[in-house]
Image (cartoon, rainbow, N blue to C red; front, top):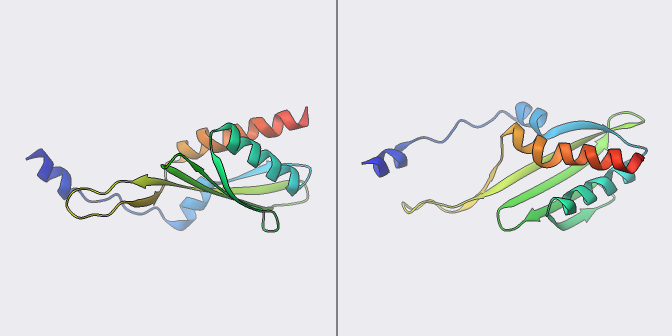
Length: 130
């Protein structure tokens, strides 16, 4: 009975794009965009991510942690000394036995982004200044 009820539950409503951008974006101070990219790479590697792709011309990084989490990070200028960093995290979700397929779903929990990426990036940037 519990199995039937669990299979009938609906998925949570999708998060609006504007709310996703707020959850996924923070502004950081850095001497330049290259220094920020360096800090992002260090942060990802220190957090156990494997760097999959780096595009220095567009300031984008893709990284993977195990087979479970994919991150896509990009930076863009906010003003002369500050840059916006946006990270999109996806988690592998295993399908159920009723025919749903396995796939990646976007992580919408703001705490995940803060604890797993933005706080460590802040620490890395702080240490780079020292």
